[in-house]
Amino acid sequence: MSKNNGIILDDIEIYKIKKLATETRQFFGVQLNVPIGNDIRLLLDKKDILLCEYPFSDTNGTHTYGNITWFKAYDDTITFIGLNTSSFYDEQIFAIAHEIYHYTTKSGKAYTPDIDYEDKVIEKKADRFAAELLLPDVALKEAVMNAFTTLNITNISENRLLRFIARVQCDWWLPFQAIINRLFEEGYISKEQYDKLFVIDCRNGEKIYRRLLRSIDPEISELLNKKTRNVGVSNKVIETIISNYEDGLIEEDELVHALKMFGKKPVDYGISMNIEIDEELKDFFESEDD
Image 1 (tube, helix red, strand yellow):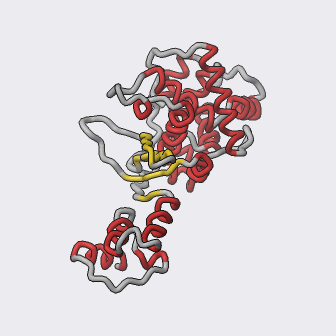
Image 2 (tube, helix red, strand yellow):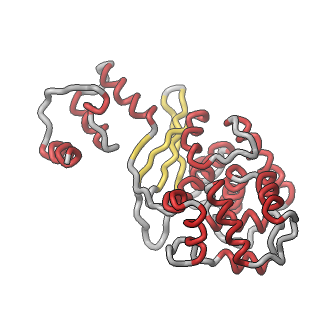
Image 3 (cartoon, helix red, strand yellow):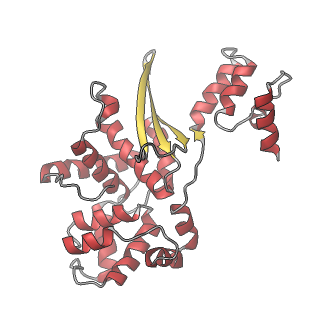
């Protein structure tokens, strides 16, 4: 989702990314004119990808939006996407789509253990895939035509463009900069427009863009610009932990500790216990009941 960094994908690479994004939507059963938005979390189950959410802090001036990890367990391959929930919510959605590219193509550092850096070309492809998955070119073209009755919007005023972008963001839930990228890479805006739009402060509630977004849909404006800081994991993981307890594979205290990591308690799942719990867990449970 970064600004154009000098890496340019050729026509064949872009064609393959568009094709893959379309095929991925087809696999999910989502039409090209239907926004995915928040449902992207639910769609991960169809690819057997587990989602782990945690609010990681910035480290040495860097910020990680998400990463993918996989390992072998007997004959199964288990895949996790780690999502940084200290990112804004629209960035979280984009990060999941980005990691789906790595999973689908088996590319990136997670699948090439002998390197300790991310290939910039692959990351560019993953970003382009995420944008194509979340906002297909046919849907963007339709939105442009409906708003302007023309595909030539290089002479449209900045304020009118910002109103259009805000409507697109409310419908499709991409980050502001990702929509600017989509308009530029599909040829709807000029390089001059792109450079001016990309640097606009889209988060500040007092600035023009956020005011426009809030006027269109205040609830979506609030959600997309929220750092949720959620801690959680896919229901499949929780169910596995509980099943392991019920099958006698883990003890009661292990169940309590495992659920505690995700802010859960055995009673949340109808499990009553009479075990002694340590002071740390006792404080945790009491604080949860406040």
